Amino acid sequence: MKKLNKSNLIIFAGLIALFIIGQFIYNRFDLTKDKRFTLTSTTEKLVENVKEPLKIEILLGGELPGDYRILKNEIQFLLDELREKNSNISYSFVDPVDLGQTELEQNKLAPIPIKTDKGTLNIYPYAKLTYDGKTSYMEVLVNDPSIQFNELALASTEKLEYLFAEKIQKATNFDRKRIGFVVHHDELPEANIQSLGRALSEKYDVEIYLNPIVNKTFSFQPADLDSLKRFDALIVAKPTLPFSDMDKLVLDQYVMNGGKMLMAIETVDAEMDSIFRSGKIVAFPRDLKLNDFLFNYGVRIHPAVIKDLNGAQIVLADGETAGNTSYNYYNWPYFELGIRGEENPITSSIDPVLFQFANPIELLKNPAIKQTVLLSSSEQTSLKPALNYIQLNEVEIEDQQEYKMGKIPMAVLLEGNFNSAYSMRYERKEFPNFKAKTTNGKMIVISDGDVLKNALWRGMPMQLGENKYSVRPDNPDGKPKTYANQTFLMNAMDYLLGDEDFLALRNRKLEIPLLSETTVLQEKSTWQIMNLVIPTSIIALLGGIGFWIRKKKYAR
Image 1 (cartoon, helix red, strand yellow):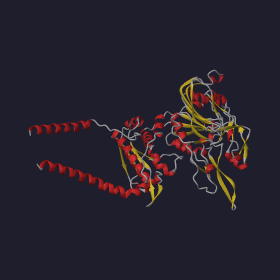
Image 2: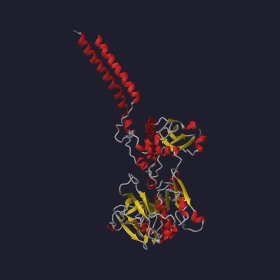
Image 3: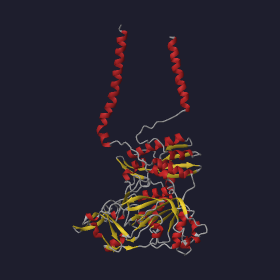
């Protein structure tokens, strides 16, 4: 008896010791295949910097359809991890009704109507963040026009860590980077750049640089360099007028002083609206006087248009039936679909990007610059030189053997130690603090300005990446085909501005196990009976075995 008491005492003491140790040592093991419950190092560092209480209220309380219940659960899993890393973070799920209609309307929190068997549910996919006395709101759905509406909730579960990490960074860090648009060469008008500007302004401070127009010089001057230095990156969006020598010199010195640049430029003038009006156009060359500038960075854009056998579809009238015009979809070889080229975080897991009349980019040897093809055409391509007709009847492909030029680069990333094109030229004397080289230079060159352009529909801007010409005239309210232009450009700017870590979050893939609702309905009764009978049978069996052992032991 004494021996038994001593053993019990040792076990009891051991349990108490384990309990005490457990208060100081804690660890969780993520055994999931995709490590969905493991935060990236980027998020962990970000969460550690939350020094004040951060309150997160998610407006997904109340009744939800199936895919939004999954989204809610994934949000809860994520926020549990954030709260575990930093006790300053707290969260709760609230019913949007509790916020009041006034607050919802003032902050433009519009509901998403979802049809269910019980009627239409108004879902508010938003979260409210309160930090240091300031309140901000975020969507818990990804802003990606290329994702179908009915797939948005499930697709967003893969991006939750990125969405919350990005918003927490915005809420806790008020030092936003700045992006400037160059506009004095008749670049894209405001109405056609609105979608991109809106997407960029969610993360960056965006401004149009108007000094050359205000000063009526219509060209950069040496004094503009100091003003441009306040921008972390510049965007040149489809210029149509030539660049002066001083323009190129100022841009050169902007890059030499550490500025990043994205240039979307075209060497051939071809517009879809003109083709629809007359059925054909002449593709005129467009000399922007940028050949020497781009040559210095190891690229050349040729004055020709790429024809891709696997181009995007457009709608054309193809006859009449019973007095009504009939329409059909045709692959239009001049609407090239940019597919991922070489491996890079910008284009990792990206969907096709819509180009329009893109030009071929030639890569030139430059040992100091790393050239990465971000997007290229398909394998089945040919070229239409400038000063040739482009006609609508080219949707009818007569000879597929014509398309055998292989993949052609259409977007290229340039990185490395850039040398100034003016280091040995007289013009360098225009700048008293002229810089001849820079380290860690970054530039992206795209051979089509329409990649950045949102079309207009009934006078209103469309989403960036929506193909206006895929809308059927006999169904004008139909949804156009949408491509990943916005995702590509946001990734590109994040990369140029040093947010590579956030790119990894945005590209992260999770495997969400889904239940088949049809199978659930068909097998519901079977599983209910199994869940009732099997545990009861196991308990009865164990009880019977225990009774038999006890009877056998004491029957003697």
